[in-house]
Length: 294
Image 1 (cartoon, rainbow, N blue to C red):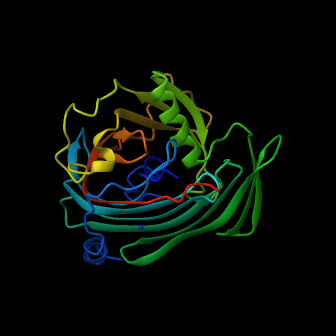
Image 2: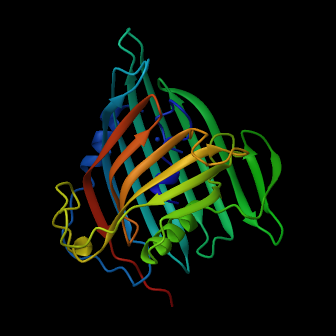
């Protein structure tokens, strides 16, 4: 599961598919910074914990957003043999300037098989500290389809098209394409979000490579020896309703912009909801050792 596949599950829903901002701050404070070189086997995604501070970056048209703030807590670990686990939480507060403040909180855990055959997911959302949607289920890849089994919000079985990719597999494909010099990727992506049945068509645009000694970061990525020798790319992933074409004529539901290192770490986030955009600064990064496959 990648960070851009959990950011902004729906328009105006700032939780990505994470009770107060103070509680999130307390959790983030325990993460700390680690500047030692973490061991990540070649070709693997880095196990890491990251904190992103969110704020309103831009408004357009008649947007009701006057101010926004929040925090993302992102804890990713695993390898291709044992699979990849993610614990994710985003807390966001949106103020429309007319006395209406909305606090949204989404907490998600996922596990994805290293061969992208299976995805297990669970999420709980809160709106103004009141419980909202709960999703619990798994998806398994078959020869001709992806079979989804849900236990929440209700018992249900759904068959999805075989072309669907899961989030961590999506990230690996984007990194592979970037290394090969490709600039455009299109995939339908499924991550178990919303009611557990949602599929988005995605259009990924990969920009020119940023070399290890170019445009030195000034956020928590600075001074990280594990990142110092890595390339990174500016990436934009746009999410479209299934059934629409990502041709430029159809506006995306939302898009995510970020800089992606070749080990999967992301920085300089921008969550664009068309009428307003939220920036996410990487304020804490803890890179962890990965046990190689046996």
